[in-house]
Length: 93
Image (cartoon, rainbow, N blue to C red; front, side, top):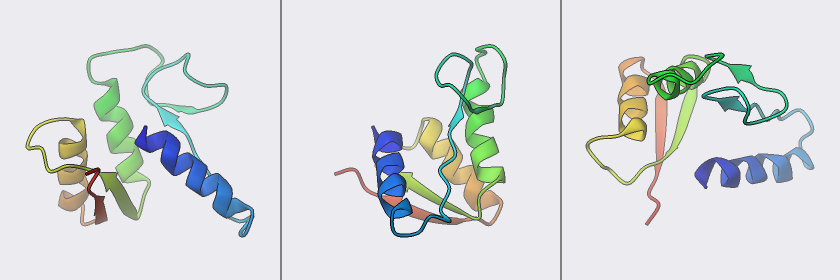
C-alpha cells in the first residue's frame, strides 16, 4: 500500500517536474515489466537484499513506519541510520 501511494505521488509530481524519476525495485522476478532485480529467484533473503539495495542507492529514506521493534521496515530503518542516511518517518496512524 505505501509503495503504491508513494508511486502515485511521484507520478503526480512528475507533471510539475519532468526531471523526477520513479524507480521500481522488487524482491523477485515476475512482479513487473521492467525492474532492477536483486535476485533472479525468490529466496528467504531477497526482501532484505531489495531493502538494502534501496538504502544503498538513496540519500534519504522515507519510511511508513509504526515503530514496531521487529520486521523488514525496522531492519531497513536501522540499516539506513547505520549508514548515516537521512530517515524521514511517516506514522501510518
